[in-house]
Length: 288
Length: 330
Image (cartoon, rainbow over all chains, first blue to last red; front, top):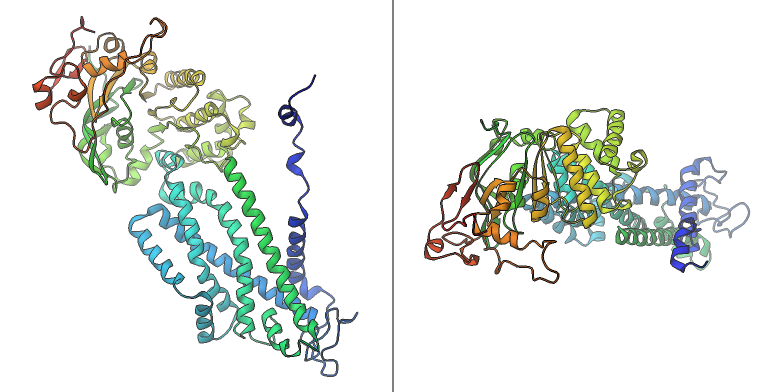
């Protein structure tokens, strides 16, 4: 007996669901896992001291002792890149978490209660959006003096409007759905409806967007540190390393390309992953 | 014979909605009584105010959209219209529960159905997580869901429409409400499933001695289940009476017209179904006289000018019409 293809497919145990992740997904994921692991475990790794200067061994090419060579003060580029990556990821994750929490909450409230609340929150968001973001960040940081917390909060504030918009747009359509009415008919208060009925529906779009925003934050931090407006030296940052060594680009390209490659791979991986996650969620959304 | 004390008593209720076109008189002077354990069928076309009436009872239309133009809703002696929001919350779901038309959208798509039932139990009855879990499974079983323990783990999209409506009923019944308002509970379902859901509602109602307001545009549904029927047209109750009585001998021409537009199995094959000509009036500016007059075959000058008074034809039969049908006409 032969069956139509569709029926045989339906009868097969769902092997297709657990197919191996594609290379486009697994390579970036592997890089991000490695980056996180290395930057968390940096103090435990058998790396050369990133702060020790060796003025007789400046701008050494890559070797067994220094995998990515040394910089113009004779410091190990790999060890410094890892510490710089740590700052980048801390700023990336921290500022996005700030933007997600504050922006998400504002968008939720504004989309659910609408009317005057919405008007005020949306107006405030428009004000933030009307500043050129990097210029605003430079202004804040150069006024108050560079520090890790300040960079995180500044970038976080810049992210608030976009998270608020996504949360608001989704909440607007969710709040009109019948399950919200059903929850009210069940006797739930607004706070509980927001937290238990609407928020779970927002998680997917917000998380996908967060991954893309971490990439943006990493670039923003690199730009600030390139201008000397992130964590002050001697603490290494990827942008700062590129900035100080760019005069020696021809003699010692490793000192610039080391941190640049780390930055490039991290941002690329975050973007590819974020895109993939977004696409999967869209597909899931369409299937519901 | 003394009439039973009503559980829910609605007097001259007026709910007007603010819209860009103007104030819509969606519910315009409705009076109803509901005794404990009674089933009241509320029948009418789309847009005649049935759903707004239902939502008004539970105070579900936000004040920013609705003008409470008058009337009272007495439930066990309290006027629901004047309760504080937090008092109203303890009525919703606990005393009066509601189920909606579309089970596809009235369950939260990202939460397991078991959890959605547990939520109701924990909210009103202060169940612990474990108690709620057990009770939710029991409830799923009692509304006819096979292997309820496994099904509680399902997400709504993993269930059929009929199953989801059963889940909705389980949620509504979770806190043992005294009144259940079912707003077109079977309209979005397959015909074969409709009968099952109605049977389930009836069975649960009898078991719990719960009063039921069954909102529908399907007279067949009402005929099988309701003790009393109220026919609603353009924001008003135009005829009200015991089900058998009213369906056998409608007095108000609108009721008669509705009945004629129901296909009957005894009719000859290919006989043309009668429709009511025209559309219900737009309730921003309703007709001055009888609201059905523009579509009524018996209407005359008086009907167009003067709104008819409510008439009492005895044995609980009430209607509003200047030229009622006699039993022989129907």
